[in-house]
Image (cartoon, rainbow, N blue to C red):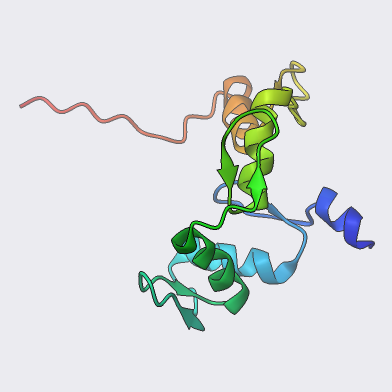
Length: 133
């Protein structure tokens, strides 16, 4: 698999939230966050947040340093992470890469598509409890 193709076709999908990953290492880390079993290798000296990878810590430190490398060409907003930048740009471009196979409706985020699919399946993952006092 080429490097570029790995960005387009996630091989591992989180059953909890639907997020996709092309690398097993990233998927395992993500799942461990949901389960509360993640192992830590690095600690942020600014806020104490723990990371299992020094690369993630490096990315996180940009928040404290207010280093925003990605500037939106359509508005004054800027971002310190490419993923957040790409999601934001979709607001301006109208790009909606996630399509419902049932009705054809398109979404800018995979999670929005997953939520929409429930309208077709009738799935209601949340239970509403009414209490009478």
